[in-house]
Length: 569
Image 1: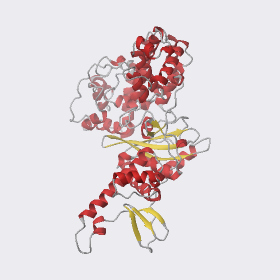
Image 2: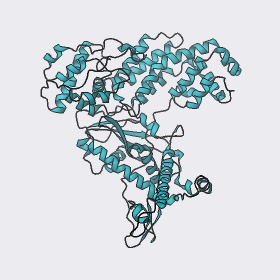
Image 3: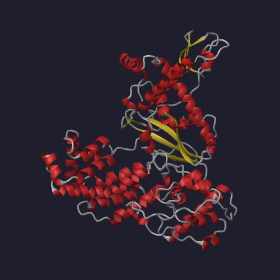
Image 4: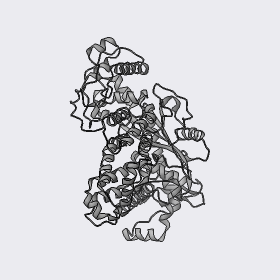
């Protein structure tokens, strides 16, 4: 449990170099024989290639007659099962050599004696590259359609280090993420590898001018080797979730009041799985869910604090739980609850995250100012100091502030000072004129007013439970800024409920606020953290480490690319 204060860094992409896959042709002078659906083997020894599959009906039908329905069904089922097998290998990052083992083929024969599985060579040289090629074509089509793309550059350090690039964008008012490429690196500075990675991932796109929004997330926070272009650019800020973890580590380390209780929880974790059914079920469930990260360990602490002292003493008499331990754990759980909420909100996959950064930072500061811990007073002070040291650069970022303003759930409710409100309102108007070329807009009809916001129950956003409209906004602001009618009108309307969807709001109101909607479509796709990587690289409940796999480099690249881009099918 000591790892509770020595948290692991945010995991980054786990993938070796990914090159745009070309489809090797077979020898045209040698007839081809279909060995497996989607795989063609050159009898002349040319190798296996992933080629477009001819029509089954034409291949299986007798000359001049209709296709055989039975053979069509068998071939279709063969293809479906093979595609499911590829999904299994990619989803779990399994070695394709598994399919050649006697045990695996015996299992398949028992499940379906009529299915002929592909060989490992057919998977490695045909099916995996073919699936990846199809996903790459789909990804390039989406990227060419998107108006603005944000790039995250992630670094995984360890025995096997790698860098990767991922694209985030909003298309048809839906947030999309595409894993572009990754590679291993051995140099001390991966900047050159990152530059080559981008060039290889998008060889046919003018990304220097089409992708103005870029930010770098990674454990080391190296600045990207790209020139800054466009009105919105985040360079070298790093990962917000990782910075938040470092705040937690600095605040809780070397705390004597906390050490004894946490050590007892650590001992309880070792005993949790052996406890009888009905005894500390909450602790056992928290342990089974995972406690390798600080927020996972916090779940175990909360479950332990919710148990009665008698139950703890009866279940683990050797640990010697006393009332002071339970009180300390309860204080810790209450003190860290907003930190856990902020961490989870900033890591949401498939949803807007950049707009949470500034409201979360101010919510954490307000929480620590209002907290009155008895046993963990020194820890609360260190947490407050760490917030100022680690998160100040995120709070000062104009891009994150503008993202919060463009989120109809927040707007300017997190801003309490009138001078700052006026400054940010003017900044938003200036960005609109910079991006759209200026010009007054008298507004357009369309869209209904958003519903009034219900009372917030979150501890993290309790400080915003005030007026439902942004401070300092009203009809007078439009006269002061005649070219920012959209800004003043938008900020003067009530906020969306916390559970509302900002992208759906802008889809419905793009006729009423065309310039703001266009800006929201560009900016809200910026991710706050590399949180989605934890999910994409998760295998069996654990984050995949490239050093843990014994895979050929190209095979690992193909499997990871397929795994991360399954949503593109």
